[in-house]
Length: 203
Image (cartoon, rainbow, N blue to C red):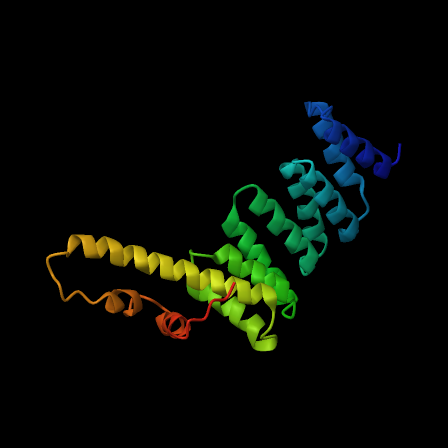
């Protein structure tokens, strides 16, 4: 039986719910990964199929072998990004995504994805990724939406802080909300303040 036929049969079994990952099946799939020629493209295809089936550990084996063959292949790093994100290891996924971006610096969609993964964890790095896209293509819809979401998150966070601080300091009538929202603690507060000041509703 050819390796492609075996993959298709395994995929069909998974779709119909008949797949049973007994140790023998895992062994055969690992053997299949090892038996493929040293061609990263084939290993990546197998990796994505295994990942679609929910077999993350085996997908990691396939992408890992592709990486050993060519560690400068951006598509392999993207496959590893997908594995790590799907298994909840976002930091590792982001590392591989940033490698893919360094190998393909003009791939704007990758930068938008990186900004989304960075999200609230590192606003400045997310802003850097979106800024790189918007500097080259100011009308890029994904980057504009990402920037709007980032600003919305920061504003909501600052408003929550203001609301919380306001409750604790209610006896002081001269409390200045703007200082809390736009103070030194916000790394790009001027951008948010000017955007809101213009009444700019980006979606």
